[in-house]
Image 1: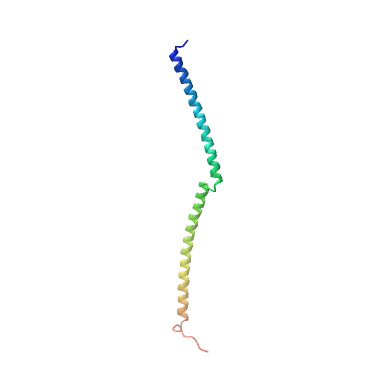
Image 2 (image 1 turned 90 degrees about the horizontal axis):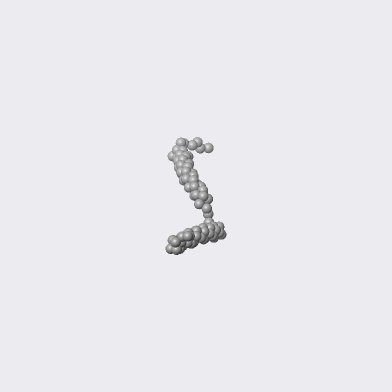
Length: 102
Protein backbone atom coordinates (compact mmCIF):
# COMPACT_ATOMS: atom_id res chain seq x y z
CA UNK A 1 0.00 0.00 0.00
CA UNK A 2 1.13 3.58 -0.60
CA UNK A 3 2.31 5.78 2.19
CA UNK A 4 -0.18 8.20 3.72
CA UNK A 5 1.30 11.58 2.70
CA UNK A 6 2.12 10.42 -0.85
CA UNK A 7 -1.37 9.04 -1.33
CA UNK A 8 -2.93 12.29 -0.16
CA UNK A 9 -0.74 14.29 -2.54
CA UNK A 10 -1.59 11.94 -5.41
CA UNK A 11 -5.31 12.34 -4.72
CA UNK A 12 -4.93 16.11 -4.45
CA UNK A 13 -3.07 16.25 -7.79
CA UNK A 14 -5.83 14.15 -9.37
CA UNK A 15 -8.53 16.50 -8.03
CA UNK A 16 -6.64 19.58 -9.25
CA UNK A 17 -6.16 17.99 -12.70
CA UNK A 18 -9.85 17.13 -12.93
CA UNK A 19 -10.79 20.66 -11.82
CA UNK A 20 -8.49 22.16 -14.48
CA UNK A 21 -10.11 19.99 -17.15
CA UNK A 22 -13.58 21.03 -15.98
CA UNK A 23 -12.50 24.69 -16.01
CA UNK A 24 -11.29 24.35 -19.59
CA UNK A 25 -14.62 22.83 -20.57
CA UNK A 26 -16.49 25.71 -18.93
CA UNK A 27 -14.19 28.17 -20.68
CA UNK A 28 -14.85 26.60 -24.10
CA UNK A 29 -18.58 26.61 -23.44
CA UNK A 30 -18.48 30.27 -22.39
CA UNK A 31 -16.49 31.21 -25.53
CA UNK A 32 -19.00 29.42 -27.76
CA UNK A 33 -21.91 31.12 -26.01
CA UNK A 34 -20.23 34.53 -26.22
CA UNK A 35 -19.42 34.04 -29.92
CA UNK A 36 -23.01 33.02 -30.69
CA UNK A 37 -24.45 36.01 -28.80
CA UNK A 38 -22.03 38.38 -30.53
CA UNK A 39 -22.89 37.00 -33.97
CA UNK A 40 -26.59 37.31 -33.19
CA UNK A 41 -26.10 40.93 -32.07
CA UNK A 42 -24.05 41.84 -35.14
CA UNK A 43 -26.57 40.17 -37.46
CA UNK A 44 -29.41 42.14 -35.88
CA UNK A 45 -27.52 45.37 -36.57
CA UNK A 46 -27.42 46.65 -40.13
CA UNK A 47 -23.65 46.33 -40.59
CA UNK A 48 -21.80 45.82 -43.84
CA UNK A 49 -19.27 43.04 -44.24
CA UNK A 50 -15.70 44.10 -44.93
CA UNK A 51 -15.62 42.45 -48.37
CA UNK A 52 -18.74 44.35 -49.47
CA UNK A 53 -17.34 47.62 -48.14
CA UNK A 54 -14.07 47.14 -50.01
CA UNK A 55 -15.90 46.31 -53.26
CA UNK A 56 -18.04 49.46 -53.06
CA UNK A 57 -15.00 51.52 -52.12
CA UNK A 58 -13.13 50.33 -55.21
CA UNK A 59 -16.17 51.14 -57.36
CA UNK A 60 -16.31 54.66 -55.91
CA UNK A 61 -12.60 55.23 -56.57
CA UNK A 62 -13.00 54.06 -60.16
CA UNK A 63 -16.07 56.29 -60.63
CA UNK A 64 -14.16 59.33 -59.33
CA UNK A 65 -11.30 58.65 -61.73
CA UNK A 66 -13.72 58.30 -64.64
CA UNK A 67 -15.49 61.53 -63.63
CA UNK A 68 -12.18 63.38 -63.55
CA UNK A 69 -11.29 62.06 -67.02
CA UNK A 70 -14.71 63.03 -68.39
CA UNK A 71 -14.43 66.51 -66.86
CA UNK A 72 -11.06 66.97 -68.58
CA UNK A 73 -12.60 65.89 -71.91
CA UNK A 74 -15.52 68.28 -71.47
CA UNK A 75 -13.19 71.17 -70.68
CA UNK A 76 -11.10 70.38 -73.78
CA UNK A 77 -14.18 70.20 -75.99
CA UNK A 78 -15.54 73.47 -74.55
CA UNK A 79 -12.20 75.14 -75.26
CA UNK A 80 -12.24 73.87 -78.86
CA UNK A 81 -15.86 74.97 -79.27
CA UNK A 82 -15.09 78.44 -77.89
CA UNK A 83 -12.13 78.73 -80.27
CA UNK A 84 -14.27 77.61 -83.22
CA UNK A 85 -17.00 80.12 -82.31
CA UNK A 86 -14.43 82.88 -81.98
CA UNK A 87 -13.12 82.05 -85.45
CA UNK A 88 -16.67 82.10 -86.88
CA UNK A 89 -17.35 85.46 -85.21
CA UNK A 90 -14.20 87.01 -86.70
CA UNK A 91 -15.07 85.88 -90.25
CA UNK A 92 -18.70 87.05 -89.90
CA UNK A 93 -17.79 90.47 -88.46
CA UNK A 94 -18.30 93.66 -90.52
CA UNK A 95 -14.54 94.16 -90.62
CA UNK A 96 -14.19 90.78 -92.25
CA UNK A 97 -14.46 90.02 -96.00
CA UNK A 98 -16.72 92.33 -97.98
CA UNK A 99 -20.23 91.15 -98.62
CA UNK A 100 -22.22 91.86 -101.68
CA UNK A 101 -25.21 94.12 -101.26
CA UNK A 102 -28.47 93.42 -103.03
